[in-house]
Amino acid sequence: MAAAPYERNRSRPPGTRPRVAGLLLAAGGGRRLGGRPKALLEHRGALLVERAAGVLHAGGCDPVHVVLGAASEEVRRRAELPGCVLVDNRGWADGMGSSLRAGLTSLAATDARAVVVLLVDQPGIGAEAVARVVADHRSADSLASAAYGGKRGHPVLFGCHRWVEIAADARGDRGARGYLTAHENDITLVECGDVARAYDIDTEEDLRHLEPPA
Image (cartoon, rainbow, N blue to C red; front, side):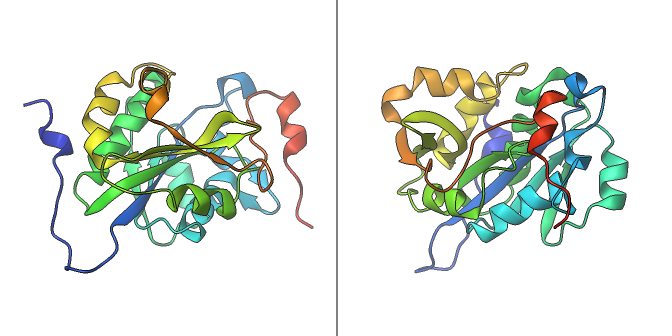
């Protein structure tokens, strides 16, 4: 059955707060950056993958799963990612959708009732934005997104009852974009423009956002 990889492990001590996992998509090869994997770019003395994983932890996500692809062995060797589950996506070159599917499959073995998804190339988004989105988790059907001036952005939160449909729709580089567009009326927007900046590191010009160690 198609849904089997996403069936939930429902064991959790009674009375405990439902867990919100973090999912960091960090598999991209940086094609528009001359083939420099984004996970290995540095910002303020840390690799982007280290920083983003730390943001998810600090924002209240547990567990945190990190999807690796391009240069995965080098990322494993260089990055300090304590407390993270590393997930290899061998099909990373197919686009973000494959990484989202790999991450949701990995999280199906946990007792998380929702997941907050963050992209590795958005260092302007910190723990406070993640915490605001985490706080919006209400049920296994939750669907929430950070917003910047009212415009939807990252991170996004998916209740676990939505994971099967999201994974089925995740193809190419669109990730969950198609699903979110189709369910626009279900999304709770969580304004984060006062605590975060939602730029991406996509091109050589964007590298100006990366700061050297203080």
